Length: 112
Image (cartoon, rainbow, N blue to C red; front, top):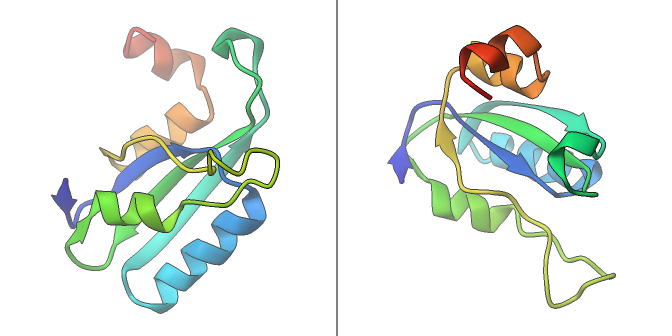
């Protein structure tokens, strides 16, 4: 998807890698703002992976596949399977924030 509007994803990258990469994208003027909220694994998610809810505001038209590729991180524990993120989705900050906080009222309003 090509977009210049705010987007979000769930990232399985390390926090240190995310901060470094997002600041590089900011410096290169590919994005104008980023934020993420780190989550430890939760019982109701059926997994054991920590993850980050990531929000990005592009500073110009971007191809989301290119951003996804920028966030590929080498994982020494599984060299054949790098860390990365799920596909990007269009969003706005308010919805992303309430979803990332797992706000019960917001999730119920979205039947989640």
